[in-house]
Length: 158
Image (cartoon, rainbow, N blue to C red):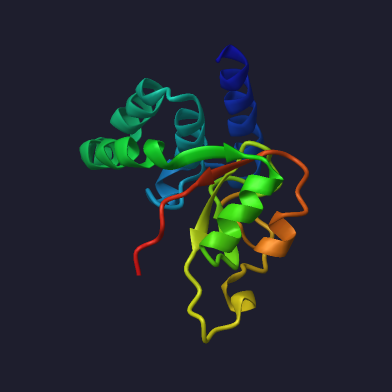
């Protein structure tokens, strides 16, 4: 777990150079806060809820209780799959677009499915600008990534 914490801290430094969230925390709301997403990613992958709780208590105390309840539900849906299992998950759920929590090229990114109505073009749901968080990509691009993948298997509400 110590290596994971080092990776998390290294990631925080790199993302902060891009976003400046440590110097300007007021610029980032809860949902799109890179610092929070990095720490939540670490906590979900490692089961270290205490680290996420400490972060939330410090930066988002008013949302801590609700978010930790959500965390307890979400952690039950986190899996790490190889490409064969990913392909099976994509096909069985008819997934056309996935969204990463942190940069989609990061081997520790956690991906979730994005609902795309049958009548719509999945490309409309892909974000064009390259950013570090909440990347949306087509599943054919997702399958080209060489690593095992972290997946949140929870189906989106729509």
